[in-house]
Image (cartoon, rainbow, N blue to C red; front, top):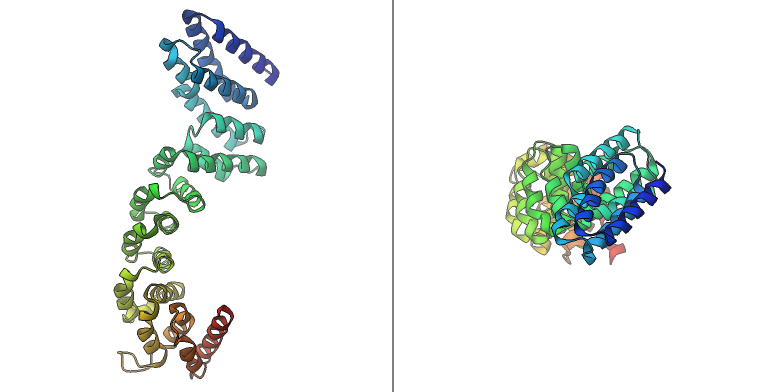
Length: 343
């Protein structure tokens, strides 16, 4: 059946629906309840978008008798619709159905986020560029306009879907999902936990700080690093004592370089001028281990000391430019240049 024929049939049924008595309206809605899923499975999305838009208007102006309200709702969002949409998305992923991207976009704009998890997956795996872009637009629209669909997807057992939804929430942050996202910080998949932390950072504000502090004890360095970055972004002064203790622990030398630097940055941003004494001691003093602090730590201190905003930072960096370690000197020199540029 061509699009024109589908359009003609749909138009005829709608015209009949508006003028029919209640008993006849029930029969027409039964026909539509069978035809719409079949047309979805066939990928007749352009004509269907027009039909669904007209049916929504019909529902709004209450053309259909009250006793058929449920039947009309079933045509628009019933279980057979969801089943048909699921089949359509599977066919799209398999390359067996390739609808026009613009028609796909408009169809879902009118239909809403039916089968949202499958939509999310399809938007990530479909190979055709324009079709994938259309699906991603549909997903983004769902993330923005349908928080209940997002909450349901955040309860998915599919780590692939979770990662994809969390990535979209980084682009379209919504504080209403904070608690739901927070539950994912104990997920078995490291990439899910790391993505969840990044969502907490961009959408949770200071309400997300307890989640970030708990994540500092995660078994994954990537997750801990993301949490440290977040604490620095939000200048979490309440976390300073914890960060200071971690900086002075000998285990800091065993941390991966990225996490170690993130720890220093978080401490400098969160502590501000109050962080300066410890950073100065690391850069120029002796450690509690009876010798100068290791070069790896002095390098980190030189890199972040300017982030404290303290007036003494340039003087301390100037002194570090004469350090006995070449890497420390170079780092201090670059940090001093950055401070000069920023000022």
